Image 1 (tube, rainbow, N blue to C red):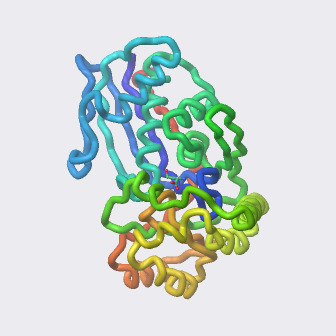
Image 2 (tube, rainbow, N blue to C red):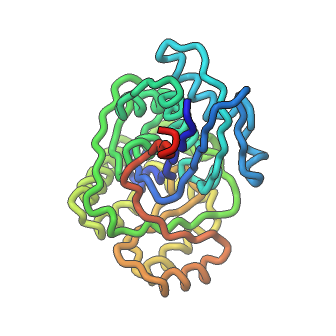
Length: 303
Ligand code: HSE
């Protein structure tokens, strides 16, 4: 086995009413530099060490082993994995999905599995339970998908996405997905569900036809999860006025939160400076679509 590098993009899921079904890959990355070793070891960046284990309880390793076993192998060649992490943990930008997708890619490479993107997606759904983060991390761009526990249906698309800016407003605290899912109702009124489903349909059609203003409006029309979750994001109710003043087309809670993402079809340094100043309690980062999804790179000297 030679040295290689796996690069997995961050993701933003839901985009408002596309709950558990719509997501986009964004320009923040986890990179895994891998080389043969005597024993498994993950070198984790210092600030992530309280949350990410360096041994076999690491989610990347557990996912790689799950993948290996699903394909009939019972072990993986010991590897030293050096992690570089630009995706904040438990903030709604797909950090656990980067670990799952990275782990599947790692097994694929170590065991020469040559899995298709669909096969990787299916394994990732079996682990994550919902497809909206792992799908775009594997394929890049926007992914619209549904997974009922057996059947996985999906449509990726990227057309026109490069022109957009996805502004991430990132609080400095963690929010576990489990906690944010715990706030959701067990049942929803039939009429409300029909209405929400309509908003989600229009969101997807608007994104696919590059009607950005309509997509932005739909992001804010969600009633599936955002009304229940915004209590966990102090300041959320004040974002609308601040963002619209700078021309944002709409904003939504990214994944389970606590990050909010705002959509812009026009962006410039002035907007960035003003929003960073106004939203100084948050890390404010303009992001762009990632079009490739997860990538494995092998240095020329190792080929
Ligand atoms: N769709 C998921 C949720 C994304 O909103 O809970 C987080 O994993």
